[in-house]
Length: 191
Image (tube, rainbow, N blue to C red):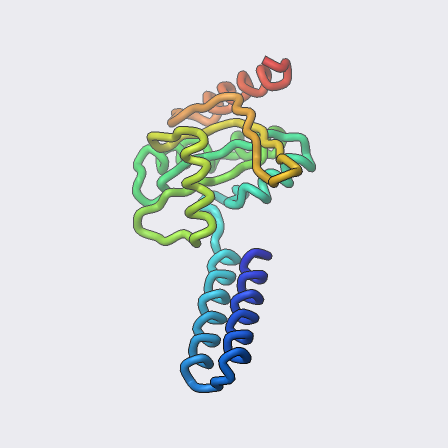
């Protein structure tokens, strides 16, 4: 959200300078300033209202990283097509909505939803974030669920990924959590 506030301030300041520089206080420049502010405000509002399809999941990798650092838990990322992917919807119904999974997740992981919808529009920031992670993990089909840790380079604020494993559709919450527990065991043993 800070990026958009900075963007808002920079766009407004740029247009203010443009107005001062040209000394033309006409309607065109006033309209451009108004339009710039409206676009920035709309972007901020979209970011603020965008949430995951599944309750308890984050949508921002920066938030997931911060939570992961705070708790020491790895990130469990669900690459999904929430409004079109039949197997993704099945995974949600067979695993993610069940108490068994939610209890397991609370104890073991930070949940991150990376959505690739077709009928709804994501805010541009999240669309780009999800695309970048999709490319980094070489995700070719949905659903794909990755378990991983992130570290951040202090020089350039880029993330490094340590992947522990992936899975796709699983029939039951217990089957899913058992599979994830095996990955967590490998992570904890340093394999």
